[in-house]
Length: 289
Image (cartoon, rainbow, N blue to C red; front, side):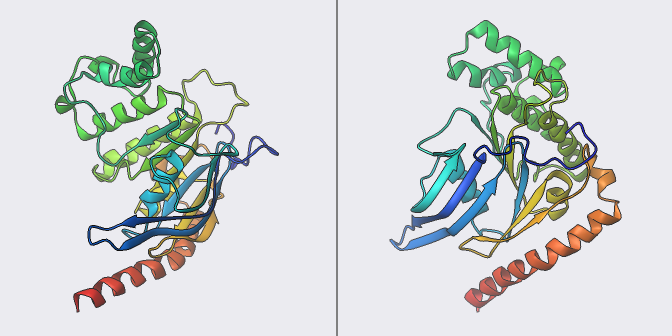
């Protein structure tokens, strides 16, 4: 992240961070029928790679994250993290949801301490780690506040601190900034890139950052953040195309969007994504008719 060129796989020859091999997931509906959310999904995320996933509404993007996290098991196929099959929820996987996952009765400091405490970290150490990460996300002066006393952007900073305090090697993000206004969303995207890239951390220079899978409906957001963008088909989802994003790092979201190369990448990806969006709309219209 500290170089001015795109980053490749920092650990050549090791197992990828995440692999989905022919993964499918079907759910039983209330009427008793089976709904297939994802089908024959093949996806690889290298160590230290930031991957954005885009696709039509309801196509199965979030289901992909739950399979990687261990919250759900595939109906068919395999899901591997670090070359090992996913069997249950892993402690080295962080998950940032669209809705704030905070305890409303706890202070900001107590919320960020909760993860380390659940993992058996002594209280004093958990408090110190939480304070460090709250300082890093600009909330050092808000440790005694409660979630309802914070703005939407501040609550998202709490969510980032809650996640990074546990030092995840895998970071799953499900439309984490979608409820924010445009300006706050851009600021949070920049903050995420800084935290992911190791700004202010003690990570060695040769150690890769967390491997990220970032689900979003915003194609501009996907391109501005990611090393590659994965386009999913209309549901049941599978990978349609993977587009590399050869924009140099470090990046600032608002400025990178003005680059001619950014616009070219956007047009290329939208030509693929737009087809799937139209298919989803046509399916919806036919059901109404």
